[in-house]
Length: 352
Image 1 (cartoon, rainbow, N blue to C red):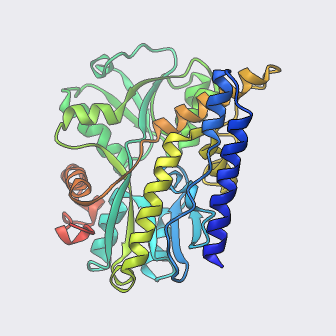
Image 2 (cartoon, rainbow, N blue to C red):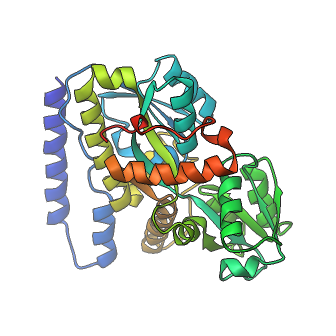
């Protein structure tokens, strides 16, 4: 039955492509819209029991949007990282997308009971301004920055970048909620803020004066040229990996296809993200325009911008290990507890 459904999906996708081609014209915008609406990948050939997967809403789970309709998976979405940890620890899920440092903590707490399959999200932190001019990180000298994530990865990343650039006179004030900081930035109560996507978009939607001044990912890559900033990954229970090697291979194949689809078809992917409630339905909303082509172009551009700022990837093997190890080293230096009290062993990494 699964094979018949997959075959039917392939046939329908082919018919859709032929129909669109027959209706084609010389309008560039229409051609772009057709490309963005391409059929999502149908999935790897896998006949085992459905794989139970958990993902944190937002960028960490966005790369899986194109595989959530696949009958080979049972997805659980949550906004609470501790729920993901509990689901893995109790065996209620087999695979999970979570923050990078949570993977290190889980590895420690389960005595090596999880492995990292891939890095799936690079940096999603940005410095935004409203009424201030910041063209480079040196322009922050003597200023006050508002941020979230005190005592967690965002604080350690920001501290590392300020130190690396000799900015010991920058004052950092922390708020507890992303939404609160986004609102204060939009209202003008805060002039400079560090926020993760999707709250970058939330703040900018509230006030067009809010602009992205700096990418902390780019700043990190400049300060640490041998690696890349990473904030999300995919992990699996070691027992599941050992007992179901083909399921893991099928999952990784589908995850690669999903990430490629999300990055090359942002408009269609954005609709999947909303339908699966990975993100709020307002995230990709644009102002209504009576001109349908302008409306479509605006929607396409916003999907492209938002998804582009989420830095969705799937990096496996030794490249995954190198990136994660460098990130863990910085986090460990800032606070050993952030990575479970000790740097993870090489056994954390699947396929290395």
